[in-house]
Image (cartoon, rainbow, N blue to C red; front, side, top):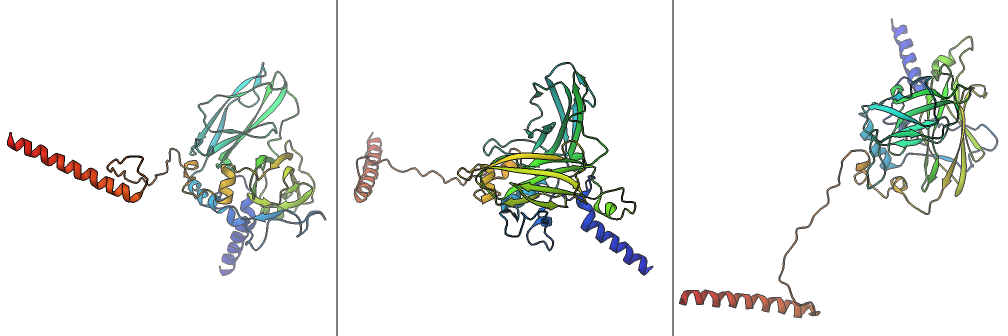
Length: 368
């Protein structure tokens, strides 16, 4: 009995160490992901894949910014559930403009007007950069779609772009304009990589690298597969030609980007380093790094905004309470009196005159 208990304990520990990060069934704890990829971790996420990536390379892993760590705690209670209501799977349209209808549960989406950030949905058409959705009451229209097959992917994300990792936080569907084609059609039975971040313009480091995985096998299952018909997975990340591997489904913060234009490539590969073939499993994005201007995200990263000041991006309708000083009314003095002593004498003289006037008025009333 003792032997069985020890065996089960070992299985449990192995599952926690190697299995959780690869599954697409909600077993990844999305609330405290920084604990898994911080520099203090005994086993880092970065591994050399080419001679270009060395310990002296330009890229390095960084802990998430402190303010973002604090704000992230507000999302531990949420378990987003998203769905694509329209278009439906395999629907055929006879025009190049369609309207997308989405549904989200257990996750408020909104944009703080002052800071221009908030929890949102990422909408990806085919493999184009994502479109951020903050309000489902506003029409989502796709225009000038080319004839053929298209795929929509949607997932829930925090204000700074980090995706939720539970299975229900992601949805996808394929539809057709005029006719069906073989492009932009991922195989739903194969592992699928969805590139999330980085993309666009950034004005502060570290920069978040994030992705979503679908149908990826558990590391434990792949490693114990005796027939070798289930291949383990890993992500090859290349930034400006410098490559490294990720074997955990977790976000990671990087620094070492050059000023100006950068390129980032994410590839889903197997344990032998071969590409896992599926639509969108090899994606390249352009990233611009310009630290000359600080937007809201940059201020969060650099600690220029506290978690309290940025609470409006995690709590809808939140308004910071300002310390209001009670207004003190005083006797008005002539504006041309510049000497402080003269101002004091003028105030005293004004109050004396008012007192005399009140006394004379009272005396007059008594005489009458």
